[in-house]
Length: 360
Image (tube, rainbow, N blue to C red):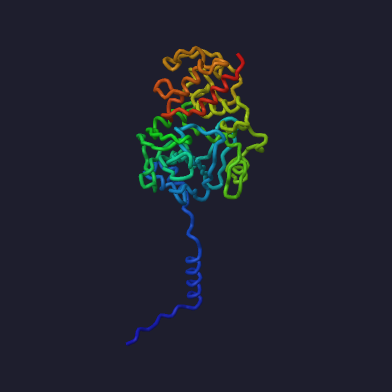
């Protein structure tokens, strides 16, 4: 006996056909950022759980995650860095003229550290080492580090830190092998400390006031953030402070050196920072030459002073403690004391030129 054929109402059949067509033709939705994961009491074990990226391996950000750069970045053993910011829908950070912006609860700052196989071709054969996230909770910021797997498909939470061997070739063609350190939880706190609280370091107006090559075209970052609705109260970029790219040889030598010190040293060496008892204050806006080291004797540098008497001796870079410590890689001497195993020869050259040009 033939089976009877079930007949659907014409209207329902048409609706099913339309839905099927839409499902087949429409692109799959982007991977959405999880606000719940950001605000959870404990961080996820895998970086991918946040949903910050549509393509994690390629560092292609998800909708609402905005890439950014800093005019002068922190030196981290020469690591290449991809930076991103995420704010909850409808929320904006409050502009601050001197400090990091005040981000709303639910915000995230994401930074991935990578090394190329050869710095002469820095866009090829990239190996991602770690991704650090800062998560804004109601009771403050939480800092976490994620270590990338060997397959370069995801990164795992690493509370205790890690040491990773890195092999690369310098821009000058010299092979370079060293041990890169992924910070532990306490080391994150040590650098990101201000008035006994964890704070972001990079996203300040003066270091964001510059262009970025967005998919829609190059645009000033402060203007882009304001237009995107994620930054409130910002003046026009022309009226906002700005530090130069320290590598830009067309910028004033003093501004380049002060920008490098501001980013690499001033998170500790400021009146509110962990190194306040040194009396050495290296923020970009510091006006008193003695306070930023000129003919200033150290308070308690120990072996970090070497045979030198002053933090900065005008005209004499090789007799200045500042240069001595920045070019050192010896524990207990080198500055910054965390976040690097290598010295940056270009930064040392810049600081030497700056001090050499000072009038006695």
